[in-house]
View 1 (tube, rainbow, N blue to C red):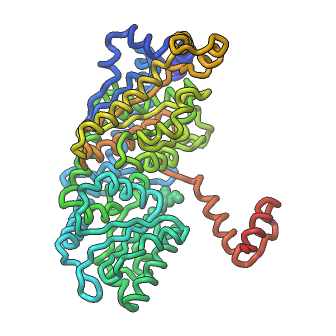
View 2 (cartoon, rainbow, N blue to C red):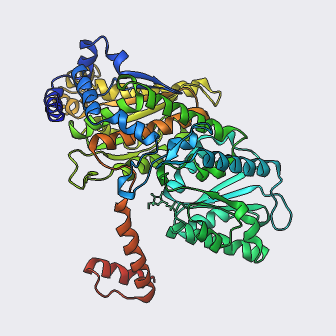
Length: 541
Ligand code: F6P
């Protein structure tokens, strides 16, 4: 079948989707669970509460084939130029493939670089944990302040929160990202300069926020310990070795990054140095192993059982054929509270685009609006709209099977809430049942119709549920790699490049210009709105 006829079939499937409720889909197909519940390393992904029937699923799989989805991933793993706009490979998988992987980027061997970098990171981490890294006054370093933003911040920050129980108790780990000086001030607050190491992470080493915060931290060190202190108390991760040297960071404390790894895919690189050091020994390697296991699953499993690919197909269907423009991420675990922010960057910075790799308008949209927060908190905030708002919002529920807090009562409570929400979204509650209940409660007949209408839950609202085996480094590595592959797969289905981010450039340029204008009180040539706002900012009384 040609690609066009596959798309036509999908459009027909979409037209009939509203005639069959989710509950009816289960009743009609005894095979549904075995098709839509897929096992992958560290997790099971249940996509059966998504609005796809067997025909839709088969057609979506045909569509993935017609787009060359498995071939794209094979080329990516081979280090081909999959990021055409920037002439780069996208070799985040090589970062976790091990030293014998024989990986390449644009034909250049990279596995030994990766192995050397990891060995250097391990050495740094071991020394720090053993108290062998000392500052300018000879005291052991025991505090890391990680400065970076976006892809150079969100991954390490998320994992540090998620693996809180695996952080070495002797090491304090703090983060600063925002240009708002409150962030770096809070991060340095209470740190002892003599025992603090500042880790500056920036792929380009030119990012305004990161350099500003690094300058504050360097001045803080100099103020307390003298001009020589940054040599002993600062480390950096970047591709820009000249800029790091100019900043005054010693080569021993410099960790490499490469242009063949995009910022939002870089957690597995030296960007994870603070984690390698602050987590118990071996934990970072287990994170890599979990991601590598998911890579193997993704590269080696047929589409029908491939968890990231099937999930990508479902999301592609939701966005483009059911016209659902948002997607919520609801991890049912406090320690996964930062997952929605991490995925927001991963998915929206990768796929928030409308022009295809060929420079023409893309035929499909790859990214819905991504937002979310952890359950059960989120239920008491915005879930109301999920149940009764005008447009369904597909939800990714993420639960953890093993109870790490040794409180089975509350653990089951959390998971029961997650299951309850997914079920309520699916089955809803019809007006007729509500009216009967109101009658039973003795509500006056004149009020029943109005109240029943207000209390009706339409149901038939889709969701996916991912159950992680446990909150371990391995499972987290697998989870993040699952979402990486799902994101790239959606881009392939839509014909866009998930590895560039031209859209963020204009705002950065304008901000630089506006900063110098604000400093000079110069509003010339600005639009009336910006001009009035600048005038108010320049009169802070
Ligand atoms: O503003 C976008 C961005 O380039 C992200 O893609 C990146 O993760 C972040 O800024 C930080 O960039 P860098 O690591 O170069 O400081």
